[in-house]
Length: 155
Image 1 (cartoon, helix red, strand yellow):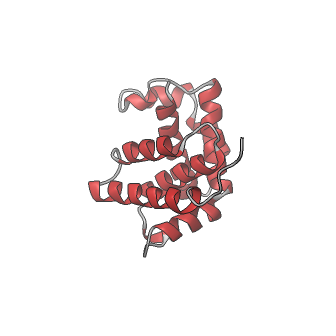
Image 2: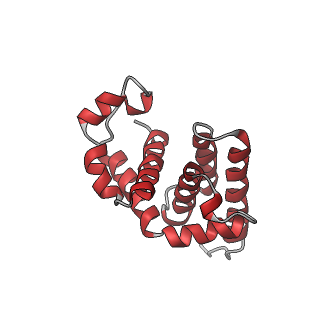
Image 3: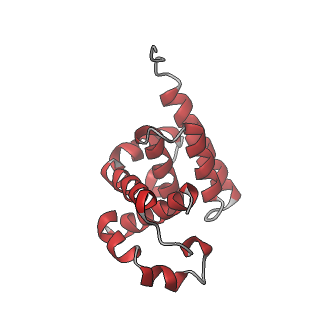
């Protein structure tokens, strides 16, 4: 398994949590079973390997943070998606944006450029090119607006 696949699964879990109102931890109990993954493995190579260890931990940490920080993440999205309220953005694009911003803000081992690149690549699996460009633009604006204005720390 790779971090990219784990990120992809985290986005799916966040999407399902937002749609169902259940927590990622509740959904994970059903989602991350050998039976569920083996039933989907023929449909999508994403399910070829059940996440374990550090990858499962990463998926649960990211999806849990996205749900916990949803209000804050949506406020950033609204601020940088000029003229777009989160309710008007597709559910998949919203899940991708929330995960990427969450990674940038709360996961120290994920550089902003990597989070943006991964978000754009993952969005290509779900959305039209215009939406992918929109996601790239929002994330780029977010980084320029939030991270570039922070003072550098002294070493």
